[in-house]
Image (cartoon, rainbow over all chains, first blue to last red):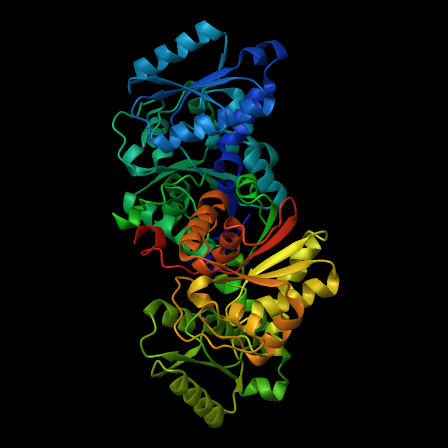
Length: 292
Length: 292
């Protein structure tokens, strides 16, 4: 956990940053994948796991499967970046390619399940995954028990669901906020509408936050989160650069969305003690957002 | 302190990184400046401190002076970068400009001393500063008492002198190494020659390591350091990028020189436990060395 006087001054709160960029596979996704893989029975485990993800969850599942010594199939679009493919292979996972559509992705997953008997581990709409992601907030509150609020980014909602369940369970008075890019604000809109509104055309550099909610994460967020607020792309880039400059931490754009919301003063947290989850640190060092 | 399995694999040793990029003013320089300022008598302190440095020591001295509530004059060349000037001013220091020559710098320092009675705090050739820099190794050995070796970058030699005195004092069997850019290898040449050979035309991106040794640091390094090894510019850039990618830490080029020496296998440390001091994290995010 890190803090920074100048970031505190910039937002008017006392911030406690939980650095999931220093986690295994450089993302909180290691927590959920690990919990899901270790929750399998010996019989299930033997047949392996499968998921669809070209992002951090794919690498995390490959890593967790190797930890248990079982196979992992990661379904990826045929146009996935080489660096993402390398990450999956580097952890011993087997990549399976499909067309870059939701239908093709789900069909390919189903085919791997049928072929191998592998268990599908969804990136976020899975209770084992949600429980695992919640351990970041568990550690945050172990270190700083008297937080007034905690804020985490929201994409599919796995991290925010786990965070809300843990934080409200341990400390009922705590406020829990989700931070979402304005250009992929399906969770914000879904909570207002009272039903899942899928994200159709996400436009944000926060590449970890482009997914739609699932039924499980929607149910948790609807009951346990105080508010979801959105941040502009400009604020996300500014927040990311501030985190690099002030914390000396390499974080990916998705990690910067909570600070972006705080910088834009979307929530009134003046003078309060706020836990901020920095979700991950996988970023292309050849293409930084403030250089384009 | 951080470690990384993939960096261990890359060099064949078990590495323990002391992250001085997370230190105040984002550099180990805060330690020496703080010790020097807090060592002054009340009478001396009242009159303030002065130094010549356009780099981390200038910012660190301004910060340390503010901590004690005393004035700090920082002599900087008239062509110093705006960001460095802002850092000094941000910590409440007063910048004094001079022509960018050694003679002008020393004359301006002497003028400030005469005018104000301020105490000169040299960036490295000062026992109070050397003692302060040694506390990084003190903490490193508190956390990992059974290190076989420790390696630190060498510019003027303040950090390496403090490191050697502390490490050999606590653990006489430990090996202490200095890492220097091949393009600014005056310490390497000085130790071989048995006399100080000033650095005349440094050519390295490691901007913290362009200084010459002083008589105090030369004396310590001559008796207490096992070897100084040099790294190529190519290896320094590669090491810096590896630290960003694997540790998710923003470090400046000077910080990467020890890892560069290890990557080039200039010292045989196979299978040993090695402390590596990452000296600082002040870097221009608009101009990264692998992008030029």
